Length: 176
Image (cartoon, rainbow, N blue to C red; front, side, top):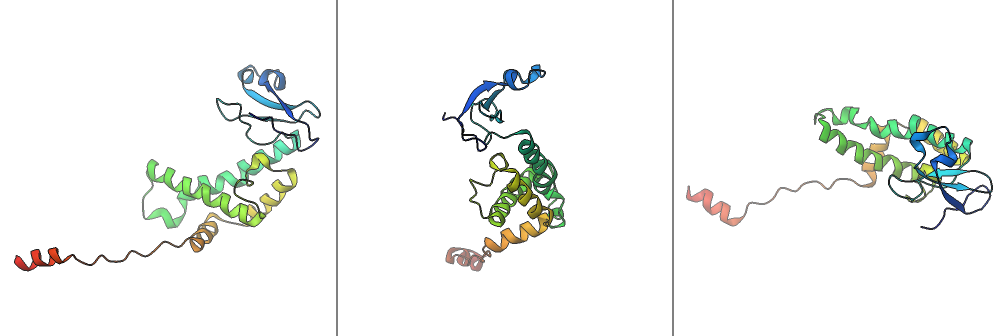
């Protein structure tokens, strides 16, 4: 694993543990964390790995990233199943998860397009505070219904063509 580079001071981060970053949180002591020795910015890792969740960030940037996730991004896709367009299908747990999965992909694709980012660049763990501010503005002015309409306009579902009956089915029908 290559160490992530701190966007603040361009120093390679060092792999440490939660014990070094959160001395008062014994529950996080064993959690792997990449920390910049230059400025103290840090980023946690994906569960059970040392793969960083993004780039190291200072306290203000981490707060902006979390706020964007909790107040704008996550509510859009997590609550998508409540949209009237889905009401006719009923929403059991399996359907709800399916809708949320598609909604999450749509929300991130929409945000990437509006921010002129590639899908790989559109991840809050990579965002600067300024990018968080821009994303906040984009998502504050948008409902999930609008995002769904946008996504469907980009990828319209092909209409199902009626399958012509096979000659053998005609013969069977006539023979009856």
